[in-house]
Structures are given as C-alpha cells and as structure tokens.
Image 1 (spheres, rainbow, N blue to C red):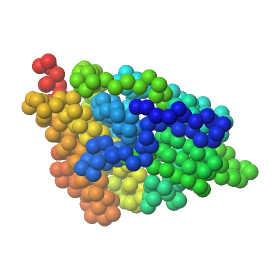
Image 2 (image 1 turned 90 degrees about the horizontal axis):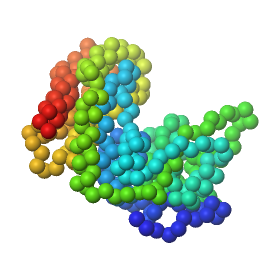
Image 3 (image 1 turned 120 degrees about the horizontal axis):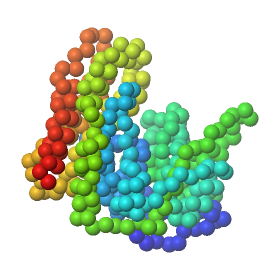
Image 4 (image 1 turned 180 degrees about the horizontal axis):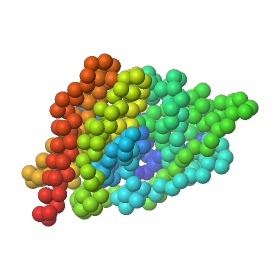
Length: 341
C-alpha cells in the first residue's frame, strides 16, 4: 500500500497508516453480521481489523485459537502470536516503554510509520456507547492509527471496527485530564507495530504454511476435554453466581463462555480457509464440530443467564455434553486427517 509520507512529530499531526484512512473500510468476514461471534476479544479483534485494512489475511495467524483451554476461572484469552505475525506478514511487534506522556510517544512513533497498540480506558471510547462509554472504567486495548493533537482527534481500531474520538475523550484517552494531586497513574502497557517490512504472500503459500502448523497444534492440544471441566465448574459456581447477580455473571461469561465460543469459530474458519473447496470428509467433520461448539456456546450465554436469574434447580440438559462431544469430534477428525498425510 502507498500513501503520503508521515507527518513529523513536531507538527502535532502524525499518521502511520500507509493508505487511505481505514475509518470507512468494510469489515472482514470474521467481523460481519453473519459471524457467530462478530466480536471475539479486544486484542484478536484489533488484529483482524488491522490486517484486513492492510490487505493481509487475518486467518493466516489464527490457527492456535483451537488450543484454548479451561484455566479454572476463565478460558484462555487467545491471541495471534508475534512470531506468526512476523513470519506470515512481516509485521514486527515490540513492547513500547512508556517513560513520557503517551501523546508524545504517539506523535513520535506514528510519524515514524509505526502503529501503536495501547491499553485504554473504555470510559473514553465512544464506539462502546451503551456499555462502558462514560459509564464504566474498564481496561481494553486499541490501536492508534493517526493523531491530530491541535484538533484533539484520534483515529483508532477497537473491537470490530475503526473509529475516531475527539475533545474530552481525546484528553481522557491520553491522560491529559487533570488528576487529583494524590492520584497515582500507573504506566500503560503498549506495543509498537513496525510496518516497514510488510509482505503479502500468495494465498497458496499461506495455506501451505497453515497446514504445516497442524502437527504442532495436535501435540499441544489440552490433554483432557476442557469443556467437561468447564461444565463441572459452572455447576459448582452457580449458587455464587446467583448470589452476585447478572452483572457478575456477564463478567464471568466474557472470561469464559465467550472466549471458548469465539475461539472455536475462529478455529473452524481457519480450517475452512486453508482446506478450500476440495476438503475431505474428516476436515469437513472438524469444521462442523467446531462450528457446533461455537454456536452452542452462544446459546449457553443466554441459557446460563436464565439459570443465574432463577431459583429453580439448574438443568443444562444436553448442552454441555453436546459441546464436550463436539470438542472430541473436532480434534479427533483433525488427528485422523493428519495421520493419513
């Protein structure tokens, strides 16, 4: 992609985006309305949007989503690895040391052609109006695309889209709002994303690299079915979930059910992407099983809320057993396919 040279930081205006503004780009199919989970988690969604905007294939770095495990109080918060981002697309991600005001860092690195991924307070993000915006101080991650300090304007990726904020939201995002004298502000976690070595591999090459990941994924998959452990934990925690109410349940479900469901939707889409239209029965079975698991997780979000909001004995029915069977079926089909290669 080509574009005008980035502005200098001294101008107070900087953009790292190498082409037309991504504000109005059409979403990737993973974020389209037909997706089971149009939003996955804040970090993975950022990469889907950024890679899509750069004309790079997000699915090329999503294979490890199938490795999610039940960790006890949550499912694995899955992310595309920095190694894969470098290998597949030439993007170099490194931690940014926050030793001066974030706005200074943003002007410096955006002007140098590097995107910034930073932790942010959703309280100041207008794209989450109706949930956290001006209501709750919650941590999330955004990718900074361009900054105009004088106009107090920021273009950023967040969740499933690209947005802009201005004015007071700009001040809040960059920590420019006056704080009480005794307030302690801890440094944010941030990364810079170098775009200078971006490369676009042919689709066939990316498909081959993805297929080559499968033996390693099979070797690293959870030893025991994590859905079964998740089911046992839910029934143990249900009395406490009922006592603490629906707001607590929704936080529990975000850390658990949503991570499980969205991860296996990505796993299904990843297999379908690299296997193409000529896939055999075993790969088709794996795709169908992981899609089933993902869809049933979404059903459980609502069913679980009803169980939490009720005093009647809970009966998840066959939902958990079906999800556990789908996990076994999906991984079993992938193992059988790999053995024949």
